[in-house]
Length: 177
Image 1 (cartoon, rainbow, N blue to C red):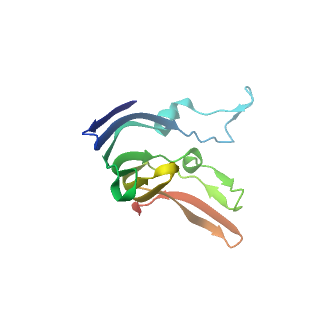
Image 2 (image 1 turned 90 degrees about the horizontal axis):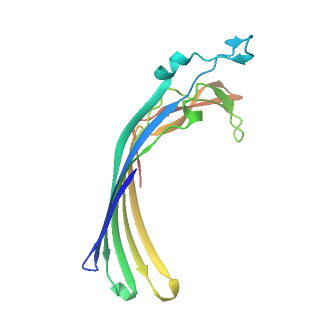
Image 3 (image 1 turned 45 degrees about the vertical axis):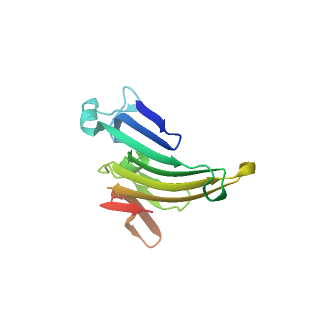
């Protein structure tokens, strides 16, 4: 669900704000190959374990952008200086939370998921200056910063010299710029 406001003041200032609500559910069910039901011909999964295995939640993610528009700035037809801020989330994918091992086709390493992974919350900031010239030409300078809590990282797990093993963990925090 999205809510958005976009307003321009004095033909020079533009404010864009938004709010996203996200309702999320996920379940990764481990399969025990020894739970084969000969009467049905399939591996059975105890249904009463679903609640314990499920991850769910809901949250609001805001965003705000403030833009200054200045025609004719430094020889350009139009100029914009924009500051943006937003909050969002990165969730582990199925292979990262699945308690299973697979062979990575590129590295040939054994990779095992980690069911204990948690979501990563991100705060994003950016500053952009854009000059627009005749003929469709433009020049853009941009800076960004991301503050990530509990980022998901790939690490080397127990293995041997010729049998590399990888898994995933949540680091404490990360910064990108």
